[in-house]
Image 1 (cartoon, rainbow, N blue to C red):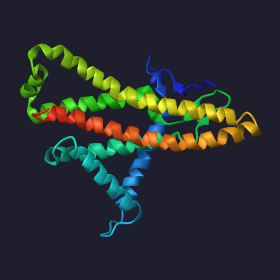
Image 2: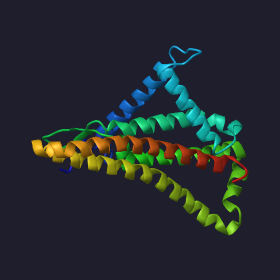
Image 3: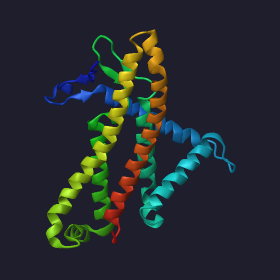
Image 4: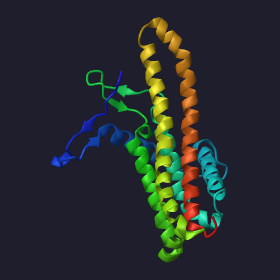
Length: 242
């Protein structure tokens, strides 16, 4: 069954201003979950961490090590807040569509899903990341020195360096979308098979559980890859040596 997105057309009477309500709801839910993770993990800090604090400190070390693998920590420390936000937001967004999906049976509108299974969301993330790399590149190097990077190692590579920026944006966003979209398509197919009857449900049960477990792995890996590429792109812009 082909599901549609709950879209509000011409919002506020503005022609062409269309809004996907599912994306707004799911991103809001993801943001609230990330906020709660940070809030409850840091609410009662102890010298000997346990529970959520222990898990959150592991995430902090993981993010720090990821950043340190792309640039020296003195430079990368300023990007720690960005890194942990990106990782947690994308990871939680990837997980939201795994346990279940909510579909309006009358209109076939898909309301609950992974927001990162929508190319609009993933490309928006990618554009924001690339914009930040340019922003910090100019801020830390100065406009003149930053502009010279496009003429290195030789000036005639300027067109290729510009094309590379568009390629980085496209691959960053579409890689995340492609993996999450494929995950949700297969989950939808398995759900459809399981709903056809008792025997079908029994036959689809084991593949469904196995694919959900694998989807958790995919979601975690894709969050890590997005974080790693973000830091790699930032290091290319803010460091003198590539």
